[in-house]
Amino acid sequence: MHGRFVAFAVCCVVASTAAHAEPGDEPRRPATVRPAANLAVPITLTVAAAAVLGGAAGMALWGDAVYDDAKAETVDQERRDSLERAANTRRHAAQGLLGVGVATAGVAVWLFLRPPRAAEPTAATGAQLSISPAGIAYQRAF
Image (cartoon, rainbow, N blue to C red; front, top):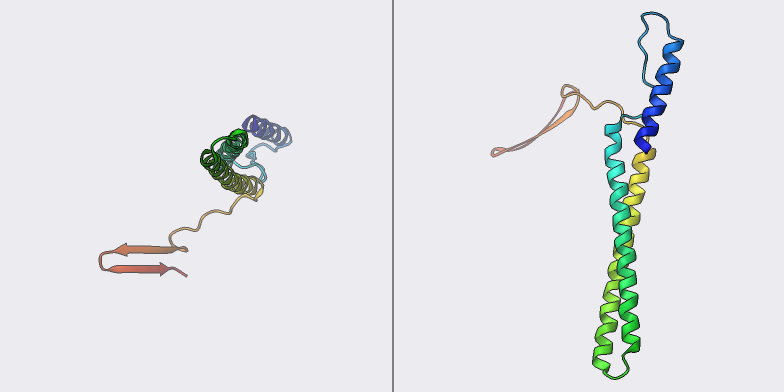
């Protein structure tokens, strides 16, 4: 759905600039619209966050069910203790998954909202790290 909206917005902007363009002018893409390839990582992280948060909810519900079984056990104290430990383990796993899911969702939101990056530096102006059997070399052009 998001990709269709972006494509629609790009078509509207291109159509509106083409209608007001001088002959020989090439329509330019607005700087605020990122190509769909740049949205692949945020969308993937959003799906992963939803899956992890769903797993956290499932683990929490499973832990609650096991704890209810432990409360219902009134005959065997050893079995009751075992069920309580299992319920606590599942709840702790759910809390860990919750943390991972929230962090993943936060990174996805940050990637959606951040401004587009400038062009990557070329090899002539960038840094280069070389690893060989003779050693490690760091080179930087000024």
